Image (cartoon, rainbow, N blue to C red; front, side):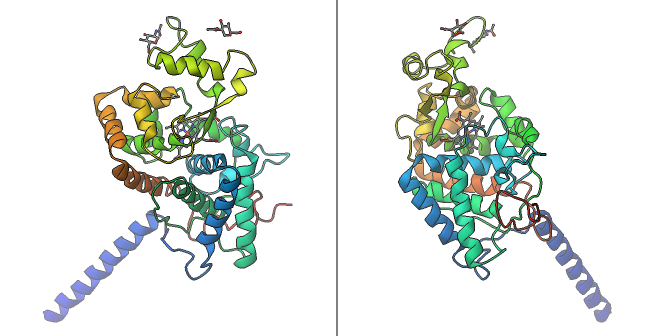
Length: 335
Ligand code: HEM
Ligand SMILES: *[C@@H]1O[C@H](CO)[C@@H](O)[C@H](O)[C@H]1NC(C)=O
Ligand SMILES: *[C@@H]1O[C@H](CO)[C@@H](O)[C@H](O)[C@H]1NC(C)=O
């Protein structure tokens, strides 16, 4: 009797263990300090390269942060954004949301880190992980909070420009469209509001929002939800000419290179740059979140790290899937 009970217990225990294992397997096997034994300086090397690059041009940091987002939303965080186009394949980086807005120099930062990592621990650190570490380092080097980056992503072998427009939200999206787009990636509306806080650093081309200044809709040439004084300033920086569309403006004119909560204070003053920014104020529940983020620097920084960690787990390849690319621009074995 006692024997049978004990055996039942063992079977039950084995069953519970099996359940736990398959649950973590679905979670994709990422871990903090993933390269602790296999490449102990990995995160230091990435930080060092990002620091050097940002010391030369602080604006490059914003590109890296945006690149991690654009990598994760297209085929998961698999480094597919970093692959170069070939004569037979137009890659993600040449899709409209990425080219020409992502700077060539930002991709070179990843190359420099990868070269050092290959020299120190060959075939170990994935390009997807380098990008995830680099995005975190940008936040830290811009005055935001450090967060731990679970790693172990493997690199994908497929990158298609045609998948960028269908997966990445355009700046014209309204609240419902943004919420749906993020939901398709397993992220909540609150995650979306928090991650939009990344627009507290960086620059935008005038073409991303000039419709709000010059041809909004049949009733208003200028978006009535945009603060008129800010609109007038933007019109100076973005004249209604073909050359004007290529100019760039800071996304957060108050503190363009500081990772603070100024983005949310801009929204409270109707000074969101894109429709997709200002739309966060369009319902009482989302406006309340904007207020909270604007008012509580500490809470926002903590939430941002959590939301980035969640975004960094979208569709990752792990275990024996994918590969560790030798050169972030080329899939292994392609000549
Ligand atoms: C919520 C939906 C989002 C939309 C519609 C959106 C759209 C855009 C657009 C149109 C630009 C300007 C590109 C240009 O004209 O040069 C931009 C810039 C930027 N975005 Fe987003 N974005 C979104 C979410 C995010 C997220 C989640 C992150 C990162 C976590 C992010 C980080 C950035 C950064 C850092 C820049 C500045 C890039 C630079 O200075 O080169 N964005 N975004
Ligand atoms: C902007 O330029 C376009 C094309 O040149 C023109 O049709 C439009 O009237 C201009 N809008 C404003 C508000 O100046
Ligand atoms: C133009 O935009 C305003 C403000 O968003 C809106 O109230 C109005 O209904 C729009 N008009 C048309 C014709 O779409």
